[in-house]
Image (cartoon, rainbow, N blue to C red; front, side):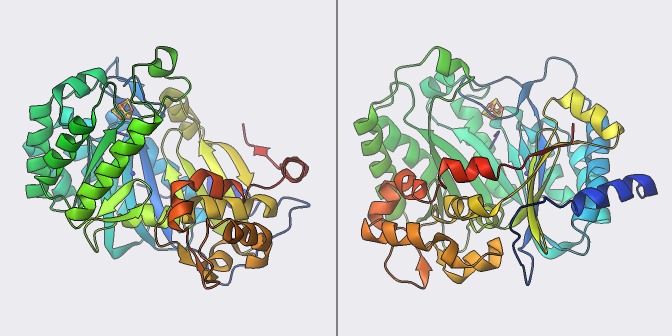
Length: 426
Ligand code: SF4
């Protein structure tokens, strides 16, 4: 996360992909869709200038020159190979994420987006976001991204405080963060600033100062993530002194109050927006929409009339390039089974402050809401879920203890292992 994603294919490859798209999973109770969910496209660019010590994303330090042209070629081939899975469907949003997509030149992004448009139909007002790192900021380059068709920029600021930026191992300083935010707002208008809280030795006052610095730009969208120590990161091995749980909760409340006061709607666990400026791409995730992910390690969730599939592409950039050349970039393909789909839906939908209409469950999972009637009843009884049967909406208590609420929908382990279908393509 640097910020908050030819010719036609050969017939044999198209046939092989079509076979994958219609793969069936014996013994799996199947969903029934009357209409498929909205579709988004995610594009992963896996390189960064330097690996941040807290980051567990599929991002790789660019030690040698990035094979930019070859990677764009591979992305377009990857997209072509995936076309049979999304025939006839319009794409609502595109998100170019990473990694640090802004490491790529504007020409590469232009070639990528032209190639995307030539292969799939985007809706006329499609939201096209690119994640950028202030450390890669050049005004001319950002203007080039805009000219290429990027209409929303997500800028990975993390903090405006020099000491915190250094502790986070970021490649940019506070002044670069300010310059990048200013230019992004001038060029794109539609901008998200990513910030983190609960940083090493961060005080309540320090966190308030960071929020004020962000609000001075009046961006349409702000994301606030709590710094957590994820396995397989440097911070996990050598933990920095973080605020304790009470201090972090106090900071979170202060962040929320300041943004609320400034007119931002806290519409999702980590996201705040001016009214009407919510991230359409992320909303599609939270509302259990479909997404095709292309690029190294990208994930997809795709629905078909009688099944839902999750896919993951090869993670290592070099291996991904090789597997695209062999016309099989997908490493793993797994059905979303009946026993898991309720949990997966709720895991996303309950992050939304307003929740979703209850009818969305059947629309997006292909199964009746009765599938999760029991955990819903328990969640209402515990005061974690709104009692209105027309809505699936967390109460303020449910938002505070979101993890506990989501866990109520986790299927029993026995049910999961009995239906754990996994189809490895490798
Ligand atoms: S910039 Fe840092 S946090 Fe963002 S993807 Fe790269 S390594 Fe991870």
